[in-house]
View 1 (spheres, rainbow, N blue to C red):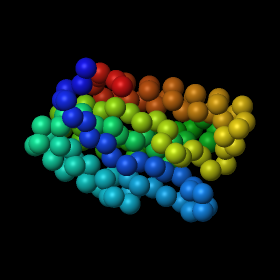
View 2 (view 1 turned 135 degrees about the vertical axis):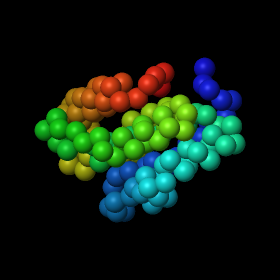
View 3 (view 1 turned 60 degrees about the vertical axis):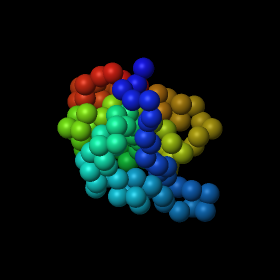
Length: 129
């Protein structure tokens, strides 16, 4: 199913933690700045598949507006390095002003997922996971 037996994963929790502090593990580990090198290292050791975080709190600007500038470098680096991505759309973080127990949350998450899938399909070769 995947290009390699082993799969890498980059920690991608992003949002407000239980202490009320903002966390962004992709930025903390500097994976956002070194994504090309990170993927190159995976390829060198024969790992050709990776779980990659799509950070909802950074992408969703509210009002059904989305900014995928945090995702595009990862899509481009994966293409350059021959890494197949498994997209993690919700890893412990959501837009701060949303209530996870509201119906709006479900609708907003569904729209975010739809727009993210559209963006990825338009900007990266498949397969899509």
